[in-house]
Each structure stands twice: as structure tokens, then as C-alpha cells.
Image (cartoon, rainbow, N blue to C red; front, top):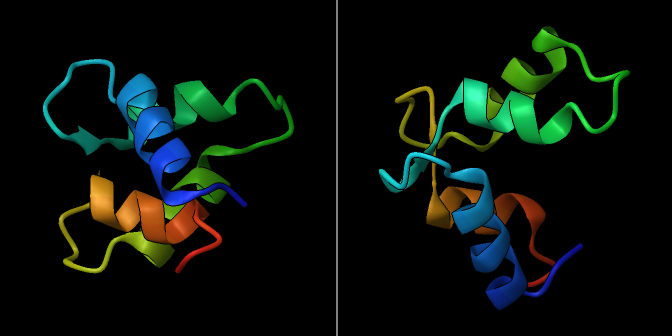
Length: 70
């Protein structure tokens, strides 16, 4: 797990179009460093962390997902 500030920095790297959200495609690209991650798994992670049901993660949702301070 990451510290909250580390998670925010990581969020900025994953949010490649800089719109303030991590989309399925951005998250999948980041997670493809582990080739065993499937589209279904990426979608499950997003669904689990997406508290406002907009099919993307904002910085607070992402930090809550990966931070040890959640």
C-alpha cells in the first residue's frame, strides 16, 4: 500500500490525458505491466473503487483504493 501523497503522484502518471480521472483504458494500460491482468479484472477494480458510479476513478477514489491511510 502507498502513502496518500505517493498515491496522488501515481494517479497523475496514470491519468495520461490529464482530465482528472483514470479511465478503464488508462488503468488497463498501467496494469498491463502485469500481463496476467484481464479486462474483466480491471473493470472489477474500477467498479469496486468507483463510489459515484461514473465508470472512472477520481483522485480521491484512487487514493482510497491504494493508500494505507484509507
